[in-house]
Length: 165
Image (spheres, rainbow, N blue to C red):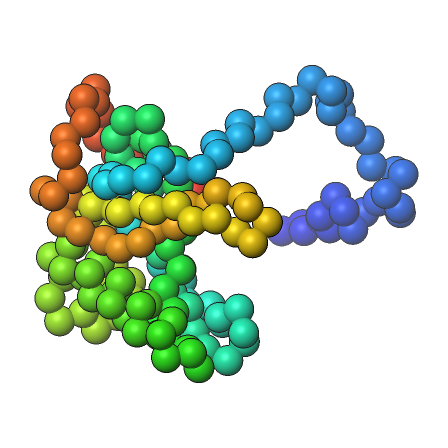
């Protein structure tokens, strides 16, 4: 079997790499803006443990996909500090993790991968202002999907879709 080097290794330099399309014809990505505050139905499609921003603890990245209304198929991440040198961050992160497991009906979780399920959960989104005055969104907590007001949707099932993460 013959193996060829990847294209980027075969080119002697970047000037040898030709673009076969016009960048001016590529549509700019859509800007989503701030998530609306409130309760929304979603599913967890991926979880990942990463170092926290201080580099001293662990943060659980809970990647979720919204199921209904104007947010349908939109994705976001909730950052849960599960091990942190800052007590209040760790407490809040673990409380959110407990809320997520309860909302998803997970009993006796032994592995974070168990959070990835097709079971809808409720996601409570809130807003805050940065020091620069920008309005940002954050996932505040998780609730049972039955506690989320119903939204008029087409009835299409969540297909998993492609994740940008």
